[in-house]
Length: 296
Ligand code: SF4
Image 1: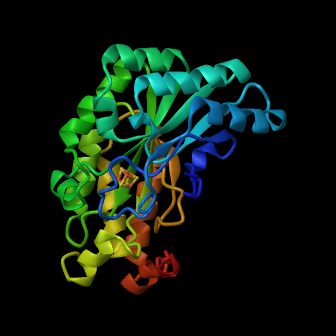
Image 2: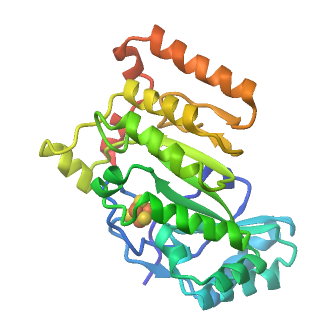
C-alpha cells in the first residue's frame, strides 16, 4: 500500500530534515481531529526509511535535526524505532536530534528503560497533543486520557531525559468552558517540564465528529473573546520555566515569549487586557478566519 497522507510538521521543525515514518493515527478518535482520518495506520520499513535518507542526504548538512513525519510514530514498537534510529545513525551519524509526535498512551506502553534507551539513541524530543487539562473537555473530545495521565507520562519523559513540546487547544471545551480550561491546563503543565507550549484556537473542521456534534446542537463554539480570556487565565496561572509559542494562524492573538521573562509576560498580559477592553466582539471574531476551512 502507498503512503498517501499529506506530510505535516510542527512549525518549529521547518529547518529539519523531514522523513516519513507513519501515516494515519493508531487512535483516530479525537472528535475535533481532521488530520489522519481516512488514512489507515502504516509505518515505513527500515529499508524504506533508508531509501528516503539516501535520496535527501545530498541536500542536507550532516549536523541536522531530523523530524519523523506521522501523527504518532511513537506508538510503534521500541524495536521498530530502534531500527529507524540505526538507519539514521548509519547515514547521518552527526544528526543533532530526532523528534516525532506521540500520544500520551504511546509513552505509557514503554518502560523507563526503553525510554532511556531511545533517548540515548538520539530520539530526544517529542511533540505531544496534550490539548487541554480539563478532564470534562478531554472526555467531551474523546482524547482517551485524563490530565493526571498526561502528568504521569510527561514526568516519565523527564526522568528519561526526553524533552517535549506540548500542544494546547484554546476553546476546545466550547462556549462557557474557557476559564476552567485555562486554569486546569496551566495547573497540569505546572507539574511537568515542557520545553515549549504551543497553542491553536479550536476550529470545527468539516467532516469531523465535532462538526456533526455542532450540527446537532451538542457543541457550541467559544467566541474569539472567550478564547482570548482563556489564554489570559492560562498565562496568569502558568508558573513554570518554559517557552510559550502562540504564533499560529488559528490563534486570535499571537505571542511568543519565555515564561520566566516577567517583563515580557507582563507586556503580553497588558496587551491581552487592552485588546479585550478596546475591541468589540465583532472585531475579535474577524481576527481569525475559520470559514475557509469548509473547502477541506
Ligand atoms: S491522537 Fe492526534 S492524530 Fe490521533 S485522532 Fe487524536 S488528534 Fe488526531
